[in-house]
Length: 203
Image 1: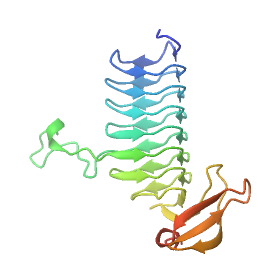
Image 2 (image 1 turned 45 degrees about the horizontal axis):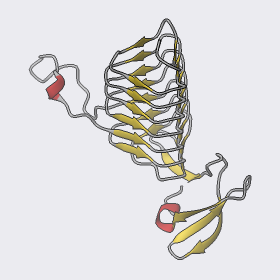
Image 3 (image 1 turned 135 degrees about the vertical axis):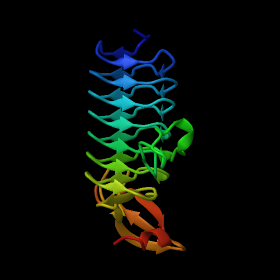
């Protein structure tokens, strides 16, 4: 047991992992060495967190998510069930000579998920990707390139179909202001400025 941290008896948590106050780690999770998990996080059943991974505060990770080495997740991110973070652009079990790959035989492709983003169920995040603040990734999407702040992406490969408010609702164009589109949320009436160059990438 750790102070003010709930770790289920079936979970396996390395002694070197740092777990923030108020965090809950549920059935059959594995948290490896040198992981940092912030305050008030939830790791659902069967979550795997590889060595050196960093999670911010108030992160919700649903059942059977795989978070591999090289991933950093900022505060307030939602990770839906069965999301997979990959870290190798050229995956092989062996080298061309048939020898098993060792730690030095590949390069980690890092992933950054920024504050408030949401990743839908069964989505896959490929290496060397940044998902911007308050972005949303649709269920089942395969993210192969960066997602802009507030961007809404779907598909395989994922492509930009719009923008969303921090409350989760889709933004509508309101007016142009200089080199930006000012978009408005129909639910909470919040306005968000999106660079025109980024706004025009929607398809």
